Length: 480
Image (cartoon, rainbow, N blue to C red; front, side):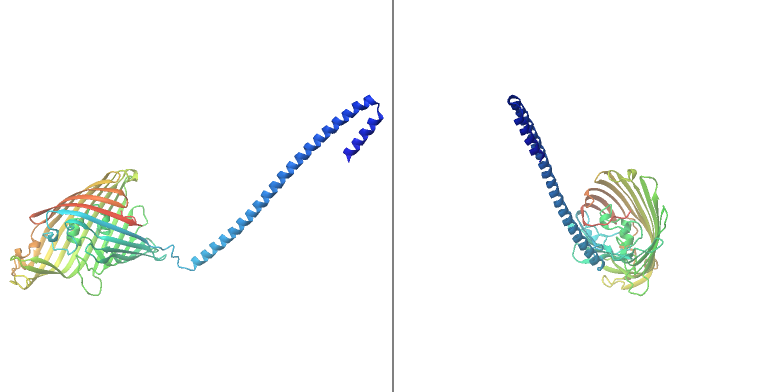
């Protein structure tokens, strides 16, 4: 409106002015009109641009609001699903939290021995009856272990370790429960388990630093003592490790025997102490006492004429053990360099009767019974040094001391002579063993082992073993 009024006024003034002045005035008016027009057009363009930008922003805001609404809807759906899943899980027994850990141990070896493994004997000592022979010659697999473990509930944990023998057949090597919530540092274990007698006995064979057990374990524990029974253990709430415990069992294994009677078969007490000397060195020492009655524990021997003889011991056996372990690793880091020194001493006393039965042999003396008392001992000392990541070298010395063996059949002149008991001949076996192993990872190991085994009277068994060990699955940490 203002623009039209201004133009009309300018025209009226132009017609009222003289002709030359009128032309000049008209030119000025046209210029002003053009400038005004340009200015207004520019302002209109700016306003249109701002309007377009505002509309675009408004569109984005609407889209964002839509996305937010969609996200909120999805979040509500997810929350509903989570609530449903939580409710469903609450209605179950928490199977996801109690899935068992499963592991498998594969072992095998190539064995080269100068003496026949099937004729292996430890002269001077009553045979333990355990699986103490070296591996068969040539290639062969060793025991395969299948382990399953899980918390049963918040009170108990269950462990089953099944072993598959190289010849076939499966047995429960360990199958036990243990408590999780007993107060004051107490713990209870029940079922079948490796006894806490000594130090190495609790460890599974694949965790040993050498391919086989020490001689004293073979002679006094049948390679490794398993118990069917219960174990109660107490750990003191102190910086120094103080561990006390006891076991009650059926006592079916050497130095006990299958009694087939009600009541307790054997009992064992143990105590362990341990701690740190500094940031690099730790130690543990222990003592144990095992007592096991023996009911008709039999073994075969050969009489003086080469005939087969069955000897049967009945009485009581008492085993006393001492053990010590020292571990060193710079600043507690064992990856690059570490050393482990380990040793055990056992003393076995047996008191009872020995029955000599030659009915399957020459039958010179069909059945003779006399007193038998033995007091024998043995020990081993070994060291393993990891001198480079993944590489270790080790040495072990074994010795059994014959001690005293009072055979009442011989000393009482009841017929059979000392030559009719060749396994009880006075002899103290020894063995020297060296090993080198390489562990590409914590799940695999290769070991080369050489041994000079003088367990047999008058014969040295030079042994070479090349062993492999593979661990598959979730495997628990090994003991100290």
